[in-house]
Image (cartoon, rainbow, N blue to C red):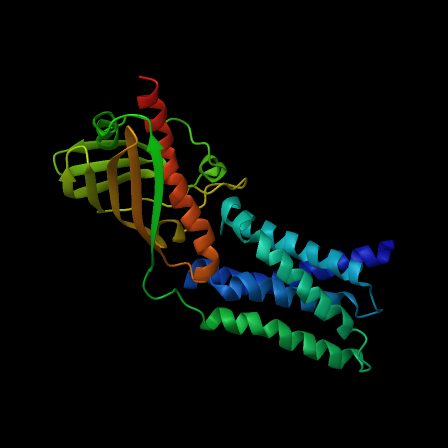
Length: 310
């Protein structure tokens, strides 16, 4: 790739990134929509647009077009971080499908340069493609209702239920998290405290008060979550992110802990019901279900290590 083409690639990347920043800003800060249009539409149409902005003077190869598209993506990420629209964690979560769709878009956009039409007509097609994500951003809105999910995790502990039960009710600290997303800032349990029918789970992002709805000593504890704190603390090298979605798109509803005597020890079954309003349910469930499983394991590991070494 010669110097002139590199300069053209950088300029076209910045230009297309600036154009796509508008629908992205609308989605992140106005409609609060993290649905399919953002995961699929932006990288796909960006991959189509960039090669044709790049190839206004001469045809470019697929590798040159993909390189320019990556410059555009990097510029968009820089804009998102610099204006504190989002943090690094959420960007990492969308990186996988975004990269795949970008490659598909480039594979479609680069051959458009070979159309036997003049440059103006080809650019008209490019502008028309560019308008699609902007229209989708304007039409999209926050998903209605919660996508409710129930996640169940089990573990066997080599100790009687009478020893496990007190740690289900009260625990000063569950220790440092092992799961990488927890270390990166996603909310995780720090400790629990029970007083009568009131239970409080201390998360890394704040207090989560709960009301006990069923209590059978040494056997079962069921509770309703009264308030859910922020889902994560965003990482951003440019400053603190005050993203509305951190506190509005995830909610815990209920929890249920069962202690079942088994094989001389105790089988502990934790079930959590939660909901999110992120759109693109099928994709985000992959993340949220695993996070809830890891919340259970954060507690399981501490209880197991504590009672089995006594």
